[in-house]
Length: 118
Image 1 (tube, rainbow, N blue to C red):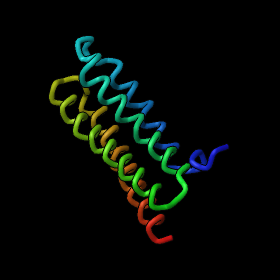
Image 2: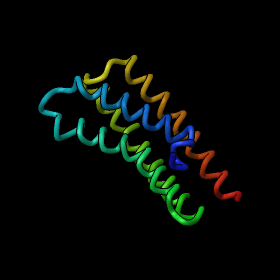
Image 3: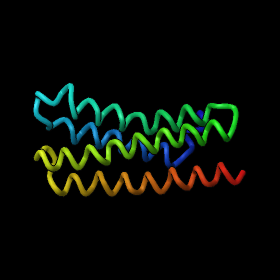
Image 4: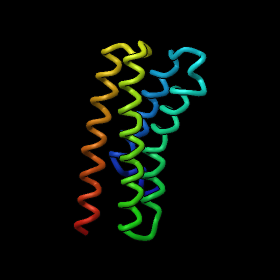
């Protein structure tokens, strides 16, 4: 088992990416290369950057990758609003994904603070 696999934030990020994939499966076909692709790629980027950062040789590098993961999370948070406004997401689905994004944001911030303190 790799070190990142022990991180709760990484596991939650993988679960969230699964939920984004599920939510975007119902988007219109003409969004396949637009919003669907952007949201999926950015959601996967969250857990990928946590994993990559954990494999770097220093806390400074890990912190940088946590920042990139956070940026990808914010990207999807913005895209959730657009998807809801376009009628691609129900209010319930939007609220669920957005709440999970808020939790991930808190967890990433906590990990960043923890790494900075060490």
